Length: 586
Image (tube, rainbow, N blue to C red; front, side, top):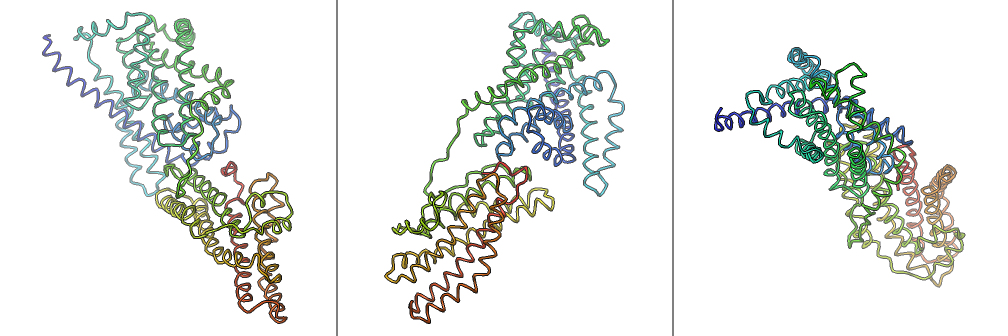
């Protein structure tokens, strides 16, 4: 066969190979997407609640990956959960370890159904069967249909891949080209490890690289040890997806992605040291399980490779599970905490996260709203009362706080609103509205987002109310008239008390009693609308304050009761729900 003829054949063959790979990947994607839609909500709930202990975390990662058949999807879920602060670094690492074991299930699927059973015979009827489901009304049934179609396409793609692999008997040139690189001993292993990594990065699917590796061994192209080296390369390549996703995420997500890389690199390093003894162990295990030795029969290699993949990932996980803490410490060194620099106009700190899942969107919105309250609203209201925040947080009696804070400090509420609140408020509402329109939310999730919007609207209303109050406090704080001064000190003390209780409600673990106090203060604010005006009437009747002072006092008294009511409602909306999801809020 002339070289020219071989080249023509090669290009056509390569295109066929890419087409077959495309079909396999497309099947994989359709199947994984359908499974995510069918089980995604459940899986994310499991992910958010089941990771408290490292072994539970590993089981969770394994279980989710086995169900949705994509370690990349699990890893991306973990990255966005850590981005939203729903998972700690150590929890994330344990889930990713489990995902590494879960991904070996796919290899077994391909080995058993792709090589042992002829799936191609039933694959097309399966597509027809699945297609019928897609006509049904219910979304649930359509997703099942897509899953069946994806599953069948995967095996049709695999069949095409097997056929598209060049026929080596008629192309000795290819075989001699390959054998140049398979006889370099340890160097060959490193070379095929690199090939496995690059292929996985390019194809973005360790399962597809696995399929290619299995076919190459079944065709007798590459021996058992080089196929094992490729599998190790896939383990490194698969971490790239998460690291790419984390480029735009915050430092927590970057740490999770780096931990995945570190974990897999450590595994590959110890495996390279024990490479040949470990392969002999796998060969013994293959024979023990009733197959031929992979060193003798090419047909036995797919089973041996799947065994190698599974045993390596399980052993690696159970070796490194004891070192989750040191891995976390190392990753924290590699990716330091990135503090956001103070800007002229405050920008959102958490809303950078992509709107991907309902859970992460809600957590992000809550974190951003809490941040807005803690950093801006608390400061503006305190300053409007002419009190320092540290005094409100302290144990100093409120009477003394009010007494000591007579020195006026400049508070421009309008300017503080423009620089600290306006931009973030706009972004929160935009993000919340987008989440409600883009995501598939259940009723409870939709209500939660609506409540977050209400809490933020109340924050903005408080700033509007407090502006007026601030002007009169400045005017009467050191007034010659002791009566008006005393009345304004009473108002300041009332609001300061609510701010202090909210601070304790927000920060103390045993916060039930503070919640009770808040409820009492809310009722008291409602009742004092009437009582406050009686006191003011007495002051006017006895000519103790001027008419102007009286009208300011009446307005501000109502205003303060309104501010108190809104502050308590915000505290209940943002800090009252102690769901497991929101426990680790700000």
